[in-house]
Length: 499
Image (cartoon, helix red, strand yellow):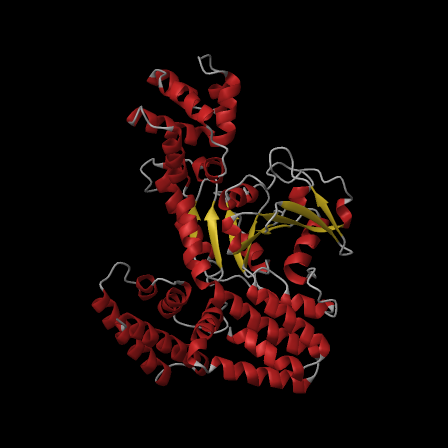
């Protein structure tokens, strides 16, 4: 990778301390993309983490672990390590149910974070960082979160790094931000304050998406235009929240984390399917009455034992039970596996995964490279040596001038517009965000599903328009962005025309 080569070439031209920082940057470039799951307390972050990983490993009940940052990464042997603030580690066994123990049996005030290694294919391409809830935590939990994601030293051998240098190279490179229907007015500030990438780069549409969790708890009748449909209401509410959180996030997608976790992590069993088949055999009036509330559902007298119904409620809630029963009544011979698929589809998890693939996975190298360049710049500034700072600056400019580095230019332009550092008319700002935030060509051009000739013609037309805007009418700052967008459209046009 060109950024890694830049670090390698500059190592002999900078101080030992800066060189140690460059070594850490190179290590991070070679590692999977680090995605932090953030949000307010009780927003269902850990449940969503389990669904994404496909294993119920992150504790969801309140305990010592939920006050700590946990990094889930790929390993050849399943294990969990307690990392103390002094750098020492202690290996712990997983709990009987396969999750991290809720109580660690150590002095939590001396713990930096947890490292969970799992033989999980998902984690080969992405490290998932589960964070304590924002907004309602004790000061110690907040401090530990900030230290790990903004300024903590990982056990990488970079003992020569000082705190300033460490701050420049630590941190997640992307954010999955979890909100609920009761979105707080200060969620925008919480997201802005969450250091999502290296060198204190804030979250933006390049490296952040949000999910509206617990979508099944929305009262559809309170959302205009929903027609009484919960999922339609959830989509409408997610669109509203997206307008509030943009440009901090690329999108907001509805999801039901509890159902997703149960369906994807093995929590939904054949015994659960059998119980749902029994419920489907009940009279309509009886079942409708039971589904009015959780209390009625678990206390009503019927052939399905109350304990079994409570278990279904804990795994699926009332919405999931209703969706499962509807599926059984539509297809009485449906198998447990097919029913699990119905529930997974109802959870909205697939849409979240697809968006993660578009925003994060397909752009992982670019996101990491942009974060790495920010880290390199911060390290040079932290050195206090004007000559060293100039050498690094010149090397970065040479790198960015190369055609293959245009994606970094585009990410930089997107960040400038999204942050408000470069003021653009609203329609043009939206176009910059669209071109820079998507990996799919049709989505980039605002013409999803269009034929290649139409895409090519539109790309060439917009390339010409942005070139004219850069030369006539744009401010110097706008012109800089416009030249980058012009080049992006031109490269898209070339890509479409390639056989």
